[in-house]
Image (cartoon, rainbow, N blue to C red):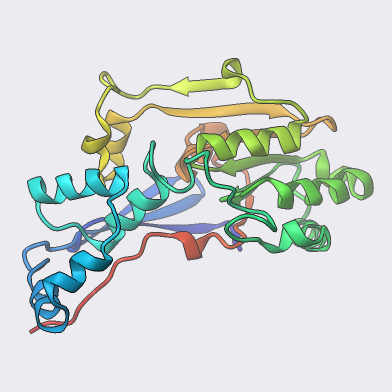
Length: 289
């Protein structure tokens, strides 16, 4: 995926569409907000469940609720039905019980929950490095380039790419700044150790608190918020380090942070995301009258 010239960012959030173009010098970012009408959520599935499965059968096979399940149950009782997208967001990225932030899971390995191509062979990362260099040459070899990886996993893909870039293409290595977009603090630490060669320290984390009150409880974060609300309530952080070969790497929680600095807005970028979109929360739409 190559993003330069016109970039389109979709912020999906509840149904009813507003298109807001934001001009960033030579780049045009089109922000689309989608709002979902919650009035018809709930009801139909409960009736179907009553007809097909008895309550005794449900109780017989029902598993005990997890801590996150109890929190979501409480939320639904207090605020009403939750969309599929909201449920997926909490299951994946809840700051305490979410799948990716949870340190108890052995996620990406041959003995873990799943495995990806970079964990099997370095050949995949080497080919991706050649692709990036080819695209850089097609762009006219700009002196500065932002190389962005979305959902970097264990950091293995970028590690294998850097081996090729550093040893075979020093001119390309000299112009890139790597940006890793990762929502999980734990995964950021794994990637940091893989690429920098040492453990991440608290002092390496740069806090960018955009709020006056960042002490909101986890239940208050359950409802998906638009970008402005998120920035008001939640401090964002970044981590900056330099690899042993002198390449700058910065970790962010959100993609927009990469271009939040004015000096980076005119720098072209290449973005990669291996097995990234398949973990996105999705919206489920049901056709009605």
